[in-house]
Length: 144
Image 1: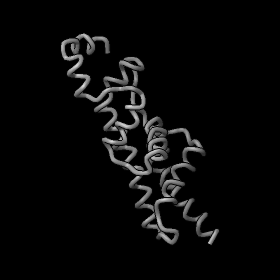
Image 2 (image 1 turned 90 degrees about the horizontal axis):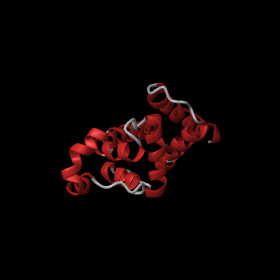
Image 3 (image 1 turned 90 degrees about the vertical axis):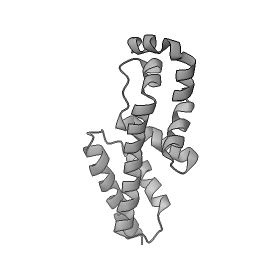
């Protein structure tokens, strides 16, 4: 059984490697990769098939990519104000955010997870920001 578990972990690891680390030219952090593998292993049955393992791995890969795109679209202006106009949402940072949020929440919902990540950085939602700074929005845009 131990050999099968090692094989399953290797399959999950290779899937993450190809779909995230190689595709986005990321530095392979063994801690990050092992954390991603652990999320998948803990969310599938012990006797899961290779197809189920790949499907679960792809589910998490898609969540990370969606979180990155969603964050870039919905939290971009706040992060640029907080961290400077050159701030960009990297996949590498999104993976770290995803791991952190998954560890705390144990589940994934796109908008709730993003809110959880960025609320903890004291960043307001779009509606609150626009209401609060609607008169200054053009000035803020020029700063960015």
